[in-house]
Image 1 (cartoon, rainbow, N blue to C red):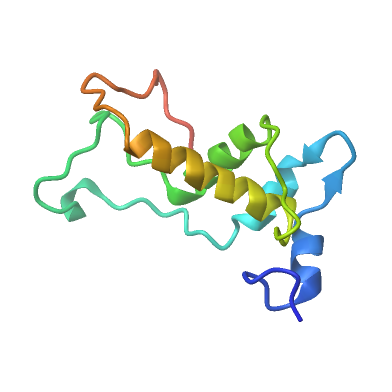
Image 2 (cartoon, rainbow, N blue to C red; image 1 turned 90 degrees about the vertical axis):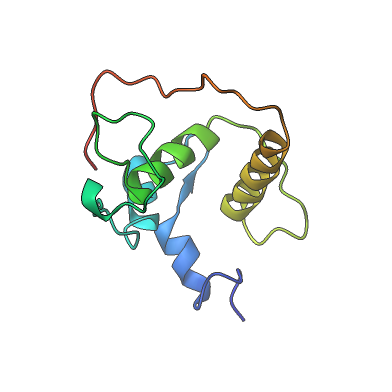
Length: 122
């Protein structure tokens, strides 16, 4: 029986994410977790009508880069791991979802922009 509903094998999670006492998940282990996420960027010509990038001078941020930066941020949090949690990683992702749900219910911020002078490439 897998330890996590997202795993097909009990060892997959343990092998891909090793938590070091007091240090959290290491960067190369995080990259292993998101290695299956495609890093390709869609060109501007393939965007649907009515959509635009908030920062038009940059390429779209890849899903892989979003996942890596989100995980890096969450590693700064102290979140609850319930007895029903399969692992601390998925407990953290449930906390992210809860936080995002609350933010989505909040007021609009029409002047919200990412802070960017340059663009990283993942």
